[in-house]
Length: 86
Image 1 (cartoon, rainbow, N blue to C red):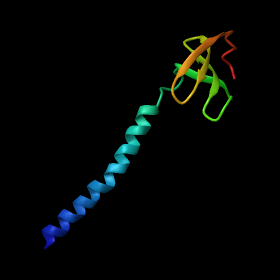
Image 2 (image 1 turned 60 degrees about the horizontal axis):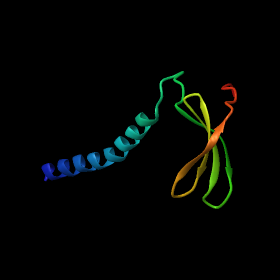
Image 3 (image 1 turned 60 degrees about the vertical axis):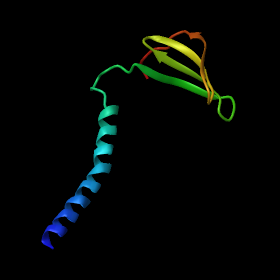
Image 4 (image 1 turned 120 degrees about the horizontal axis):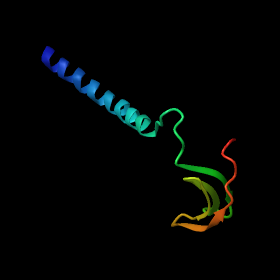
């Protein structure tokens, strides 16, 4: 009987560790080293419909104007790069 209780306790422990492990993996994937430059930065966005928006995005020093819908993202043009300091 003691063996059954021990097995059940270990099962509960493993089941409780699953959400904790998933949370930890999610946190580690989003961490960036301190001072590391961001590769992609959304500078501004303007909704133009229920699921459509125009985005101003900085990518590798370039400033792109994008149109985004639920199905696709389209390059609308390139804008002058604003200063990086916020």
